[in-house]
Image 1: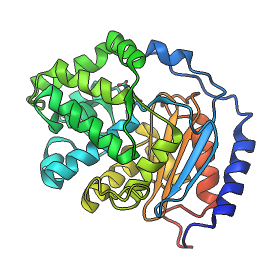
Image 2 (image 1 turned 90 degrees about the vertical axis):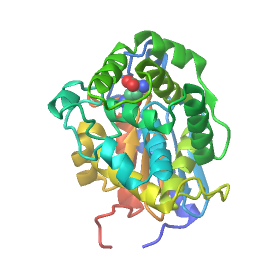
Image 3 (image 1 turned 180 degrees about the vertical axis):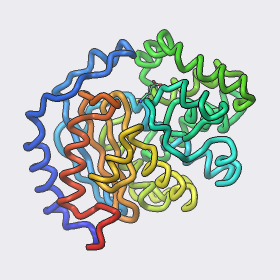
Length: 312
Ligand code: GLN
């Protein structure tokens, strides 16, 4: 079926917001010091249809750092530029079953990153954008801004805070280099990766970015083609298997949509051909996924009949 009318969507978003606003489960991430200062009561959501209609509620214009959700879009850009085979050769597409920042997952797989949605694979993916750090950042900044349909800004405070504490990501990059899986200088790649995670977005931005994947790579608000249809499809496939870290199987079982989460509290779920839903709420579960975000997505996936595996 197709997506319901605008009035129905607005009513369902309002119900979801009301239903889960009182949820107090989860904890705000604080391993990146500045994220620990996030207001746990912030709660916003936005839905953008593949034909460009936007619906927003609550703190949908509140900015936060995109964090791991950037991984999906950098992967799409790299798939677009280099193609399915070349990218797959360097970064796999299977779930690690381990936390997003696992070093063990990389070691157990002979130094080959298992997928682009965990840190090892994301760092390897960022390296594929360009060997030169300045051009690498410019391409990512321009590409993610095209997905959002506006020029995204770097959150300098988040970037500085994470650069002081990202020892594990530096270790992962050096490990990738030792396995000859990273061509550019490793610390430069970690810097670009940390910058991409520090881009400031709103739930409304994320919904437009996701709707661009839902719309086969064309931003439905600006009309601009950002990536190829194939790159959008490749990205959604990886989001289905790996986007919610080690909870990806449970997520697909309950919600039935490709999705990506980030430690600042964003979740983006994409219904191919239909649209995308983004939720922002900082308290996270053990895997690093927003608790309210998951509940809102579960509710709306059912209410809007978005589950990919449902035949009606
Ligand atoms: N920048 C964060 C990190 O590398 C992103 C992690 C996340 O959102 N899961 O740890």
